Image (cartoon, rainbow, N blue to C red):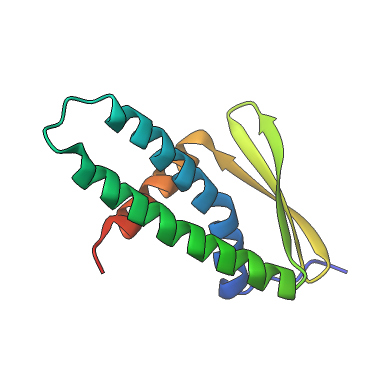
Length: 119
């Protein structure tokens, strides 16, 4: 029996559980760089980044909660050459998701830009 296609909602959940943690780590590293910078008023930028991180963590928490309710899982498998591999279980079917390093960076950048927009 072949694996059924994932729904857009399932893909969005998997995407959130893979890329939101990367975006959060990126912002946390940027905060450390910001602390050592010579900006006149670094607190403004720190606050913006803290707010982005809070929103991302809330969205990640909701995504994980939904995944748990739907008995879905996502995990990091490892590296293979220039690719990063994640595993998932969706509706009882196991799958692998392979990403080129460039794709991981560009998708993380997209997420950072989305969350940087003031709502």
